[in-house]
Length: 102
Image 1 (cartoon, rainbow, N blue to C red):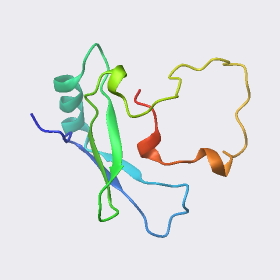
Image 2: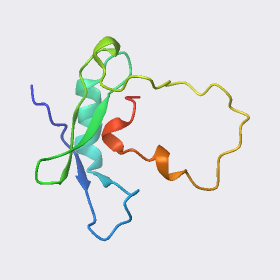
Image 3: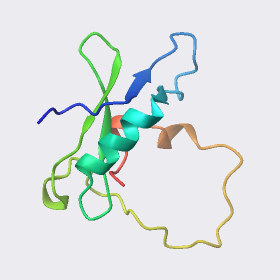
């Protein structure tokens, strides 16, 4: 079984602002099959990481919750009535590889 899902690629634009880490592109039919073949209880967790060469890539996150590298995050919104800020503060944009698995 491959660590890398079919039908999805991550692209980084060198001219993009620092807070824009990458763009995800989906080849729909291949990714639908990837979703169907790899889901667990209706979920599929992916990671967007950076290679040593500085290029983003996508791989499966097959760790269970106890082994997650994303400690300290809550996956459910506590207060759904809170308004969204106009722009995220700079210090909260720590990178996609720090994002909790959903």
